[in-house]
Image (cartoon, rainbow, N blue to C red; front, side):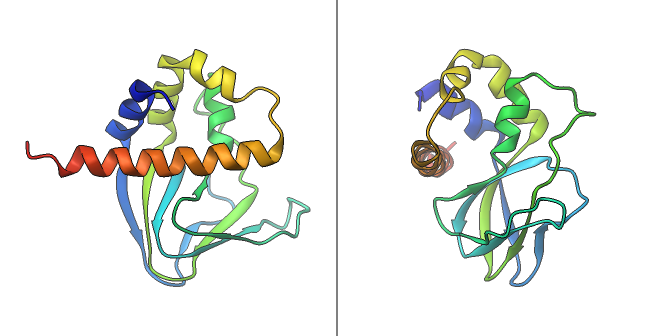
Length: 150
């Protein structure tokens, strides 16, 4: 990922923590943030309406909420959040970095050319690898930025 894009994302990240067995995202809530998992394990499973049955295990380096990238790349209004398709629940204590939809929208609209290249027609396996690398890069950049004395 471009260094300037990483910096912009890191400026908006907030460290969040979730206790074991607590819901991170529930059915019926708007999808208003992306999460980059840094510690712990979370389960991501389909809502009743999604029709999918795949349960995913989210661990360090994984992220959730990629639908927001597509939403932000279309410069959608805040009244048109993506529909929640999965529920996320902490299996163990979970720490993650979160970026809110409005902040993601700012980053994507500022660096639209970067994201439009990334969101084109990409094979699912390539997209998953890119997502994992992006999550790890963002985590490392955030930690370096916040480790420096001010």
